[in-house]
Image 1 (spheres, rainbow, N blue to C red):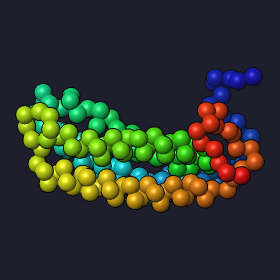
Image 2: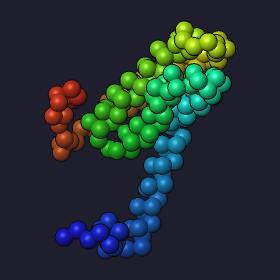
Image 3: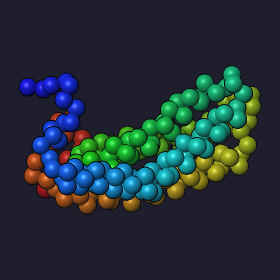
Length: 166
């Protein structure tokens, strides 16, 4: 029976060595994720989108909030996929990352199409360039996902969208 007051998640029966090993693995996975080019580039893009939107007059910022929301999604979705150990979960997050990255890439053209205050075209061009870099890094990462060993116990995509060749 689940006990809400038991917050050790079944780790109470582990030795100190086992606990240290799990802590070491968690730290190594976190370090790998934070040093991965996808994560770093996600943060670069987020910083750029935030800076561009904050440079706009306050009454025009809300118009571009969906772009900001997409920029905020890149890093966490990568973090969720990075060390999950599941091809299916990694691909689901990759699809979401692709959606949001494409939204940002195409949304950059809206900066100077809407609103009264134009964004400096150099900043827009820089963001577009960073998005192109992101796409290249993303493609490398997807190859990493596809190289994952196929687990016999891998869950199946009930929607039929992500089907791995056997």
